[in-house]
Length: 156
Image (tube, rainbow, N blue to C red; front, side, top):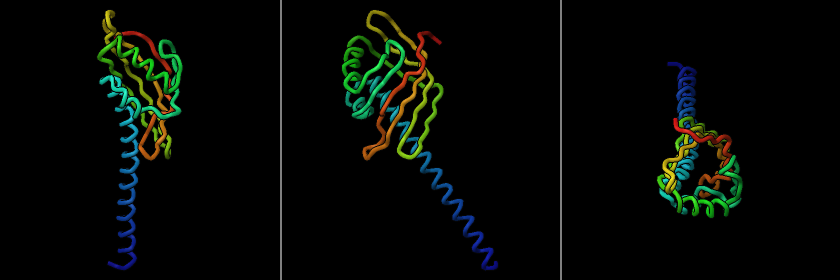
């Protein structure tokens, strides 16, 4: 094999290895961003304020149609205390999930359902579409903003 063919073969192998490494890095970033959604789901299911603190940033805000409304980090905790005292078995499920990573900024787009058992009122289910804006810092991803884009009651 001539020297130039070995050089070309070596460059091709190097290109494949670098391509696989880059793909793995991108997948890992998306997986890490997906873990942020998992933190939110766990916080809701386990009624865990510590998990919710890991989910939201110091400058966190949210907005959406009623009953979500709008608020900031402190509103999240006061409203969750009230919600958890009157409900149980909360779940957030995404039928369609899109994870977007652009440097240290991430977006989670979720279309699915939110459900919970309301004390004295039975099962409540909402169709929901939401977007979570996240920022990656030294401690990992945190949510900066949650926008509930659509929310309608119904079983499906």
